[in-house]
Image 1 (tube, helix red, strand yellow):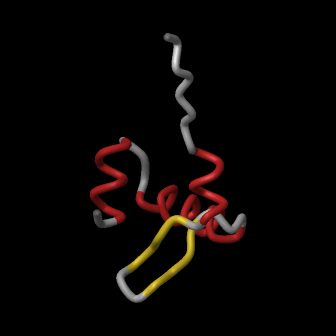
Image 2: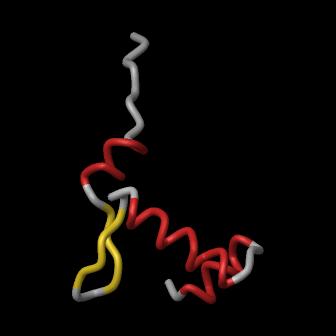
Length: 55
């Protein structure tokens, strides 16, 4: 998804998208790769959802 598409989808400015990406990169949550950006292990661990078997 392009940064412009992200901005439109979230109804925020493109500049906010750029700042958010820069901050997430500084925090080690994303990293640049040959295909664009990818989530790091830190991101995955921070958003991982655990389910509890309620049987």
